Amino acid sequence: MTTLTFDTLAYSKKLRSVGFTEEQAEAQAETIITLMTEQLATKADLKEVEAGLKRDIKELELRIKEVEAGLKRDMKELESNLKRDMKEMEMSITIKLGAIVTTGIAVVATLVKLL
Image (cartoon, rainbow, N blue to C red; front, side, top):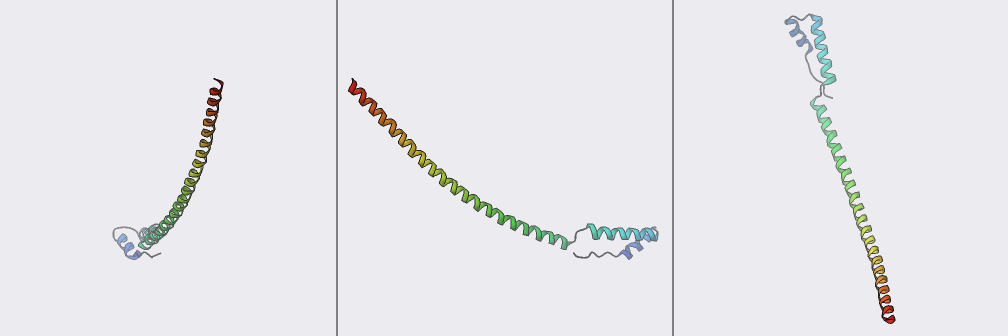
C-alpha cells in the first residue's frame, strides 16, 4: 500500500494560526492522519482491486465457457436420446398399426366367407 503524505506540522500550525489551541490542532492532525491511513484508498489500492477484479472476471469467463461446453454436450446427448426414443416409438407404432391392419383384413376375410 502506498503511503499518503500529509504535513501534520504545517496543518497544526495553520490551525493554531486561526485560534485552535496546540492540543486541538494536534488532535485534529492526528485524527486526519488516522482517517487517511485507515479509511482512504490510494491509487495503488484501486489498481490492486482492479487487478483482482480482472483476474476474477477471467476466472468467471473460463468457468462460463466450461459450463457452456457441458451444456452443449448435454444437449447433444438429449438430442441423441430423443431421436432414439422417437425411432423406437415409430417402430412400435408401425408394428401396432400392422397388427391392426392384419386383424382387420382377417376379420373382413372371415366375414366374406360367412356371407
